[in-house]
Amino acid sequence: MAADDDIRVVVCDDHALFRRGLVMALEDAPGIEVVGEAADGHEAVSVAAGLGPDVVLMDVSMPVMSGIEATHRLRERIPTVRVLMLSVDGDEDTVFESIRAGASGYIVKETPSDEIVESVRALAAGHAFVSPSLATDLIAEFASIAERWTDAGPVRPATLSPREQRVLELLADGADNARIAAALGMTEHGVRNHVRNVLAKLHLHTRTEAVLYAVREGIVPS
Image (cartoon, rainbow, N blue to C red; front, top):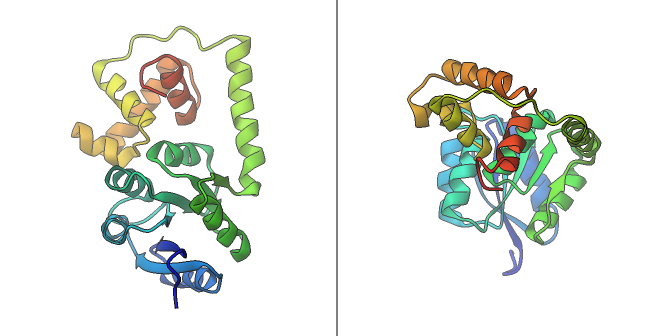
């Protein structure tokens, strides 16, 4: 029987077997109650918004709506919910987009079940959590960016077009390509082309650098 102070969790992943494994691992842990499940991004928002859990485990790549977009929408509806992103890899841009969308943690799917349980407890306690296997790479990436900017700073960019400016603003807001496309009435292919143009004009290398640049230059609030 669940206690009133149990951590209430919703698990969102489109792979049924993996989702079931997560649910079993969490339900075996004392003080955690799995209150709901979802198999796509749209269902994730609907289920989590209806149940008001403490923590949502959110797969990055899901059908109908990505986990990043689902996180953004869910955080708009329930600002207090804590979202732990799940992914098959630790791509720096995806991690950064997840954080900008409102996620409080990010782990890879190969993470041992006991570490997943601890990450859920950490988020419920108000802390952030990133898989230790990702931490070193992320720190190295940000250190590399900082070093490049300290040594020379980005080259003075060419003027962005109004559309490119808007793409940069949406990137910095944590939007993925699908949400940018919907917001601007474009195809995702068109968005990718605009992102490439923005990076080229700003003399940057990744979407993460573009977001950091936008915040640093006051194009968007930090």
